[in-house]
Length: 228
Length: 388
Image 1 (cartoon, rainbow over the protein chains, first blue to last red):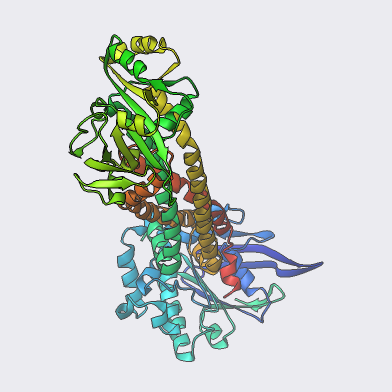
Image 2 (image 1 turned 30 degrees about the vertical axis):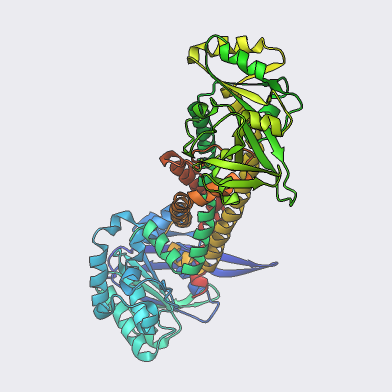
């Protein structure tokens, strides 16, 4: 698995945040390789730069310096439209707060990204059903988020992130709002997805989650202090 | 699901807010629809009426044609008069098929409450007014103490054919020999008298306010006009010019109505813009999440524009339907406020008017959506991550 070419290659990633006259180095020359089919955890205290890194990897934030290569293609300086295209086809993102659309059912939430991806619309409903079956929500397709538990909502969010079969799944504190049982279920699901070839990168505070991955990087002050 | 479906689902989340906004747009749509329908209808009805009457030329004393037009259609007293001699000459002018005389006079009832309008008419006048449907009979003689009432006047006097009524503004009793079926024109509000009776009662012996002339053919109108203009003190106004004068008179009312439309449009479009902006601000996080799952800035802007378009479309359907259904009420209301209303439908909406209304509202709705759409497109996906 480690001999494969990395799906994501990050070199010298730097991101500064300006706070008045002070400049905060959120990322300070980060290097990272993510292999397909692995589950990678990034841990560290608050403000260490984990979420900034995830934002840059998910193309929702722009680094000040460094490069990000996706499948060998430098996407660091891509335009907004190109970034949107990459996000809707190659990258899935899972949030701590789930961020499901409250007026849509579980199935409609799961297939939401296909609204913006004409090519992915064909067969979307079948794929959505299959994904929700896979995450154990086959009986709750037509339930709205308020009718689902936190764990179920997060599983719907994972199904949404997977609807376009992305190569990379980025998860920002995916278990932070879940009890331990639901948390284990979600981590197990993420590992299962990694087992099917998806590169999963998750940011977490939870040592149990971090202990159950292929690689774990510790961050502090915008740098990896150890890991791999 | 596609972008349009998403837009509809988004609007359905706030049914009251969306409903009120649609209602605002519908009001604007109905107003535009009514004004466009009126713009077409009034002119068409007026020309139809003047064509139907068969009067090609109006002859009155020399003066301002718009004053003459006002007098002829609304009633009123001119400072100078034509005479029976003019009428006799007009009848014998080559190329004239029919010439009918009018004496217009007013009377003020002692109890107040408006002015009574009297039309002394010669026997040719009914033939110049083919739109008249007379219940009862024509006057028994040109000097009989008889009256034919317009429909509104008949209601006011609660008159029946054959009954005698006292007209307070004249302090005279007349026998009602006929009642005109409702024409929806000013004729409904007139009291028609035999010409000699009117001349006697109003002390205008031998005098006429105007003469209506029908030429034997349209081609002969210019020659007839020239011939009639040779009569002393005669001012000849072609019906076409009369219609133009009336349109000028109505122009002020139309301008006012257009201003009202403008205000209604601005208010409703501001309401729509407000709804869209509120929706955009409330859903910042949702839009950020949508950006994260692959929506481009353009797609989010398009979704906002589609929401505006859906509101506009529903508003136009509701507004134009209301315009079609409530056209009669509006017609009656407009009639009360116009200096002159022809007997035909004042509001004549058609598919073209409906389409023009739709396009106008849609363009304004899209204009209202521009800024909210721009705001939506600028929402950064990073917001979704920053807020978990």
